[in-house]
Amino acid sequence: MPNDLFRPAGPAGVAMLTRRRAGWAAAVAVVLVAVTVPAVWWSRADGADQPAGEKINVATAEVVRTDMSTVESLPGRLGYGAAVAVKGRGEGTVTWLPKPGASVKRGKQLYRVDDQPVVLFYGALPLYRALGKRNTVGRDVRVVARNLDALGYAIGRQPSVGERVSQTRPAPAAPEPTGKPRPGSTAPAKAAPATVTTRVTVRKGEGVLTASLIRAIKRWQADLGRPVTGTVAPADVVVVGDAVRVDSVTAAVGDEVAAPLMNVTPTAKVITVSVEAGEAGAIERGDKVSVLLPGEKTSPGEVTAVGTEVKPPDGESADPNAAPKLAATVTLDDPKVVSKIDSAEVEVQFAAETHEDVLAVPIGALVALSEGGYAVQLAGGGLVAVEVGMFAKGLVEVTADGLEEGASVVTTS
Image 1: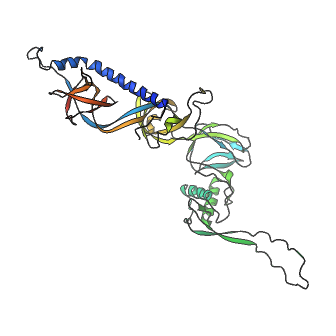
Image 2: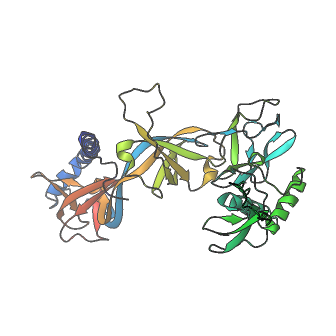
Image 3: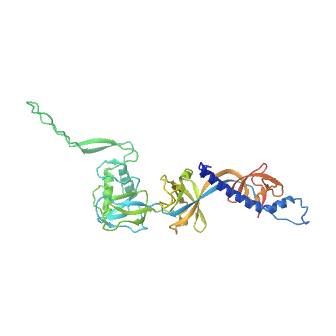
């Protein structure tokens, strides 16, 4: 992740860096208080004022080489993500609807119209035409083929990209003859062909309504108890990306189907984080995060999506002067940790800045020097002046000549 994460240009960025550095300054202040007494002890290292034979015990820690990151914590909400509306298609009367909270998978009915099931298919393209004519080519055909195949129906071989298939369609009506017939002409007019055959090339992402696929459609229709026609109409299925959870039902049994029927969400729980538009460019899909859950439990996660639609913060009732925001979606690595939680407020920690392969010591190992700056005390040795860098998770980045990984330094216990 880039080092300039959450460091937007302009006054907002300056303010953010100021807050971060203020936090580091506070951490250093704590260190100074903690090391005040040890600093006096260093000045007496020759043991001039120590009682003879007295043994002093001090804590030590090793200098480690590691990657260090600061974090930016943002509030998020655990739930099922944004709900989307499902609208009925075609004509008829709604005769059954699912209950809120129900989960529906591929091939299962989502609702019923005229006591016929309307089932769920997975895909990115809704059906937009009736599919029943052999050798019809299109991406909508591929949706039907892939779903029936996934449901266990034998669809046969699908033509490959670049293959050509023959399509037969009715020939256009012959134009009416114009002008008067030539005197003495007795030749009969030629009859127009009843059909026209064309060759169509299969492109990437398209399917072909082969004879085998039509037979699979008929078997599927028979299993559903629908009329066995071999034709799939747009109103027969609802195409979504994956399994859905019914969030709410907005229609009633007996309503006309061509209306909003319900709102659905994904079945997997996700965390939604609102990010100011100026900072969202630093968050990328695949970024690793840490999520603070209820009960102070921390669980790792990953950014799985970053929205592109800028919205006012927290709806229309929010402060009109507040910065617009984008939604980032985070998925937990282990969904089981929230299996008993449907909704909760959480904190999501994003890596704000990373220093790789640096030396670090516990913050308590820092010693404030009277002439300014900091040092660490080598166990059994003297002070080594260091330059400090990033503070993170109880460690501080240090740079010094002669200080190596594995060296023991004195620290507060």
